[in-house]
Amino acid sequence: MQTSNDNTPTHSNASSFCCICIFSALYEPHVGGVETYTKGIANALVKKGHRVIVVTNNTDNALEQESAKGIEIVRLPCSPLLNGRFPLSKKHASSDALWKWLDSQAVDHVVVNTRFYPLSILGLKFARKKGIEPVLIEHGSAHLTLGNPALDIPLNIVEHTMTMLAKHSKPRCFAVSQKASEWLSHFGISSCGEITNAIGADEYLSQASSRDFRAEFNIPNDALLIASAGRFVPEKGVMQLAEAISHLTERHSSEHPSIVAVMAGDGPLLPKVKALACPNVITPGMLNKSDLAALLKQSDYFCLPSRSEGFSTVLLEAAACGTAPIATDVGGMKEIAPSNEYGIMLPSMSSNDIATALSKAVSDPEGATERGSRVAKRVRNHFTWGASANALLAALRN
Image 1 (cartoon, rainbow, N blue to C red):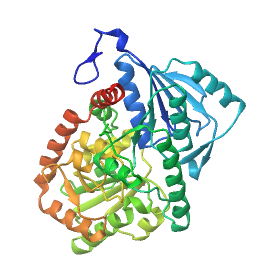
Image 2: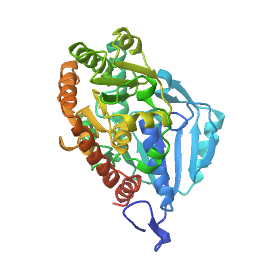
Image 3: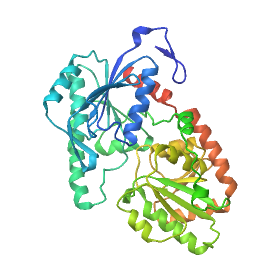
Image 4: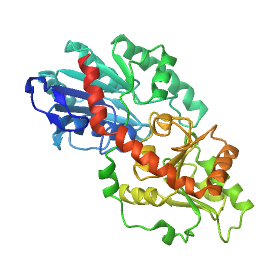
């Protein structure tokens, strides 16, 4: 099939339309980066005329089988361990029926998102049973962590064991970012390239609510507004960001602040962030998609001092809003901001490094607008779902 640069297919060769089965351990209604990636790329493939089946775990007691905007969804019974972050597939009468249905489908290609979930192993075995060489897409750039060494050690053992099982199926491996490709080498796996995360910029911007965060929280118009969003857990660097803002607040007048952070989200570290009692750190809790888009549009920078990311979805969302990143060298940062003209790279997730970067940003208010304009244009030109779908199709046909 011939395609345009993005989503629109040229229907000159209908015989090249195919059935693509995507195994993703997590999918909507569950919310997260892998879920967003799977839905985005599946939608783009459907728009190009392909049949797409998404096989996932039923973590939220949703319908076992349904069709949504042309995507056929199969949700297998599971035990949602670790608050749903690690669903464990389980035998059930309905799972036998669903697998029987899958076996009967004329599947041409199999794609597996991530390598360490039980469903990923089942997807790879399904491909080999069908005589198909599977494509595996890596989404991580560091070991899984729960922020507790006593739990992280056995979790790492599980990850290495599952990766060994995945390697037995000999998939062709790709990754969502350069960092994720590099991480594959840790397991002795060579990446064949990147099939990057993406965003529908216009669609994302159109959902922004009218909520005015500066007015609601009495943030001066000339104060630099820093946004962050995500789980309040150690690997996201939320404490370090809050401490950096607190340090800068002590150096400047709190009555007329030069910098304010609105840190959206929830998690175990939220009480510790609130305990800092910094007037310039605002914690509005979890935001829905519309309010988060509004916050990102109104902010000067988006700060992501994470320990690791595969390819951060919220980095793309901020960039689509014209909000430049201040982030560590995590997956997606170099792609979105290849130089200081697009964003500010943090040398580490330490509060001192964050404070230094934020001080520079405060001293150069015009830089936020200039970087935001450049990064918005870059995301629109290079990180569309149509382009990522084309990259996946090329990988499947090679």
